[in-house]
Image (cartoon, rainbow, N blue to C red; front, side):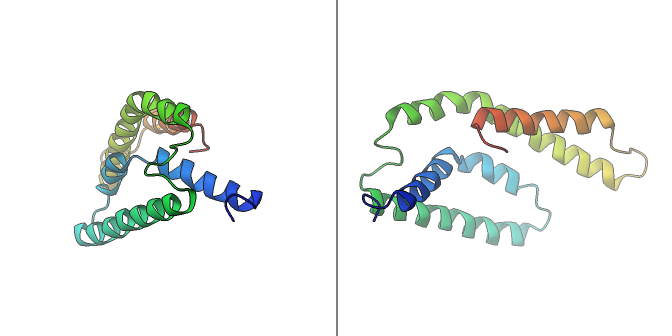
Length: 133
C-alpha cells in the first residue's frame, strides 16, 4: 500500500516527519510541569511506549532501520535545527512554570510582558520546527 497508494504514503510520511521531529528529552521536560507525579509517570510511560510502537510500525511499513533513512538531508536539517529550538523549549517551560507559580500567588499577578515572551517562545519554536506549534 505504501508504494502504490499516494494517500497512504503521504499519511505515513507525515507521521514519519512528526516522529522524527519529536525530541523525547524535551517532551519529558514539558511532562514535568504536571503536578500529580503519579499521573505524570503513568501518562509519560504511555506516551513513550506509543511513540516507540508508532516508530517501529512506520519502520516496518517503509523498511529500513531509521526514520527518514531515505531523506538524509531532512535528518541533517533536524539535527542542525535542534540546538537552536531546544533552548527555546526550555525557556518556554520555565515561563510556563513561572506563570503557574504567579497564578497561585495573589501577590504576584501574571505580567503582560511574561505572556508576550511566552507567545514569542511558541512562535519561535513553531518557526524553527516549521509547523504551527
